Image 1 (spheres, rainbow, N blue to C red):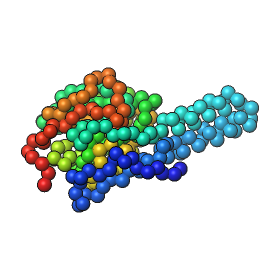
Image 2: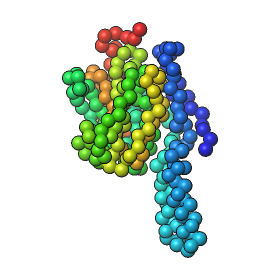
Image 3: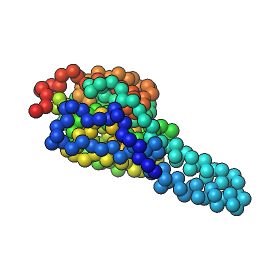
Image 4: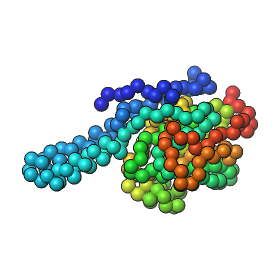
Length: 244
């Protein structure tokens, strides 16, 4: 499958330092390559079923192959807002908007998004920033809307530092069916806002954790689209000054 040109909206911001390598998107094709891996088998079996006269089975397998391609679709998006706008990291329904306590005792604003199997599952970076850390954890595969999934499920959390020194976390969290999390950036890379940086297979949740002073622009139950919906706005001035 040929690769499409990267979206013009995901260009490096002027704040990025030459010392920081710029993350290069890999998920640029209209359909993610995982669709080929997972869709070939049912497509081939559909052909075999047709040759054997099992028409109903053949149609069912063909429908499964089409669904796999639909699931791994990767549409182009116009990235909304400006550099202080936090864009949705995924398509889906807002589950939570509220204050949480971090492990170090500090307070933060968390916005959680539930992705059904019918949503686009390619994840986008909510803010522009340098990757400070990527941490994997969890051991369960509870339904993504289960409150216990927030702490128990297998996850991958990427921590970003913005140009003004703010820390923003984006977590890819597996669901009841999801079993694989893909996160392409590496620590030290600068990831432009709206960049397609990873995906979760088959049903999941994506959370964004922001400075407490950030202003939420969505409410529980809202539908959002990755990259083109604004979840929140970062404070106009970061506490403690800017980056050096």
